[in-house]
Length: 291
Image (cartoon, rainbow, N blue to C red):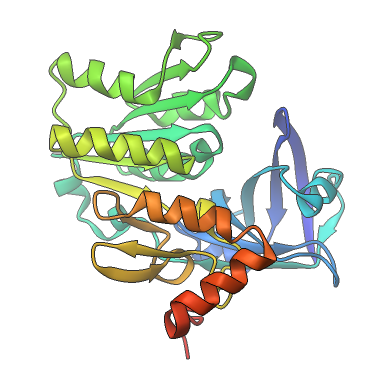
């Protein structure tokens, strides 16, 4: 059993938990995820790692209530436990394998939309711990949905917050902030965008136009977390990939977002899943990547 040490509501239907999981914390890296299961009959839920503390043996997750299992999860309190907490899974952010000195010479921009702020945070924190500053844009629909602002303020070189309705900081989409920063003379070597699929699509359309290489995390389309369900199948360039075993991070300029979003909608129904299995044949499932 994996004890919940902290349970905190961050915003409407968004909550944070610190979970005691020593083996996961000892190996976790920014960009990876875990699979959480409440009890024997609970649904397996893939969740991006928001933070980890190797000394305390804890892993932080941020969850949005979107179904029965996450509603049940939100009712758990400090002292309760998860039946399963498996990880770390997926490939770490590519920054982890780069030389810190070479990273210091790069101008890096992060864009977090909504819940995507959570997986952005550990990457920015890791860079900060290695003496590397990065600009960070956080976007949300309203002020009440802005999360991890204080935490991000401590690790970002510059933090820009924007809300769709203008209820906090500036008004507008994250793409408008990117345009403003570039127009002011900022030259970025790489952009990392994590958030809703539609947000990542339009960020990538803009950064491709601006000539900024862009990495996206396709964790929003993961379901099973092992490649066996076929939910996170996507086209990257001319190749079939699976977000959970090949990613979750990919070159955003090569991801076919339109196909991925259409497929995501189809996968929500039993009839749609059956049609996808028929159409995709042997490429429908990706396997666990270890067999």
